[in-house]
Length: 182
Image (cartoon, rainbow, N blue to C red; front, side, top):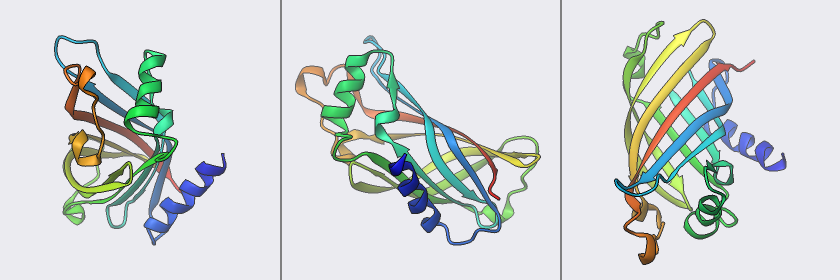
């Protein structure tokens, strides 16, 4: 709980304006590092914290690495201890903006957008550009996105014994439902 409060403070400091903020603490982030013909290496995290500023299109998110859930406990253990070292790097962050946000009409159907920002994993930060979809329904905003990252870009090393099973390029999907922050 203490870490969640610290993460929230971090996220609040990333976006300075408070008048049009939307918030979620149960955003869903999924990743798939599977290679064809081998067992699936997939995980889901349903407790991602994110803020979206409707006024300027800025987004900030914090993901607790140890909250990713795998179908096999051994995969989860290896993921946390060997690959992402969640004891040393407990969170991943994203800070970015929806490009040309001022030209987007938020309506009841999804509109395609480009999201530009910085993703930090294991203390390594890289710029990313991702396609996404956004819509507003009443006082909620839905944001979906999918993109890929190379594990080597974030100093994630795949042991030689399993490099044929784990894809170097991991697919990430986001599905965040924001509510107005009062």
